[in-house]
Length: 342
Ligand code: GPP
Ligand code: MG
Ligand code: MG
Ligand code: MG
Image (cartoon, rainbow, N blue to C red):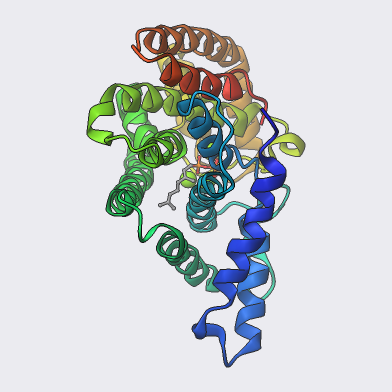
């Protein structure tokens, strides 16, 4: 099967020019230039895994048959809707997390003269998803289901983000409140639905499927998304910023990260005290002490154990699925993230 990436990137240019050709920007060329710069800075610069997965999944659901030009374009357009959604989330998440870098460049809101205009840019990105859908899917029998899917997943993600942020407030009062069930709830909502369920659900809708009949697929994908966010938590502390394109802030931000939950599980009273005293502080010396404790407690080893158990468990779930085409979709997704370094 041919590499879908060149075609996918081509479709970005088409969608972008359609969006820039909006009456809203007609009388002010500077507004069109602003949006173009904002899109180029925030939308296409990531790994594009979520977007490309729509095409891969749709192909597999079609049993590997060559797609028509029209089908390929539509699968790419849906993939880009997910990348637009991701860009919208990241622009806002970086403000909320006080991050500095993203995808190897400064966060959008950190650029001179951007600041909190980035909040409105997030809204523009969000609204453009529905303009793309309207432009290309309005006549399709699954249009209403697509709208409903994007709305539902956005709500789930915003809810996860809220739980992430308010859990931090509770942790600041009492770190011992952090636990695996709370962590699981956060990551399921803030990451798994939009990153894993959404691309496959888009492909299923395009293939004429009814999503209500695919709750088993959803469950596996949520499991995979959970595993993916545990990796994200791990890389936040132990990843190479040059490779992941961002400098971690979870320790400074007092996040309910998988690492701190595991550390709390493994620590003795003295080590817990050290954690209470140093977690959530911007001071690099405090951050270094937390990282040192993670080494002592072999959190890396705990992560590797989690990683292989989780892989086994997900593989078993996939192999229990009756459809070989669906199995192929899920396996290809899992292969893309297993032991990822970025
Ligand atoms: C990832 O959390 C979750 C999101 C990017 C969803 C944000 C949702 C909003 C409604 C704004 P993270 O903060 O761990 O991601 P990263 O490590 O990439 O900053
Ligand atoms: Mg966040
Ligand atoms: Mg963040
Ligand atoms: Mg993170």
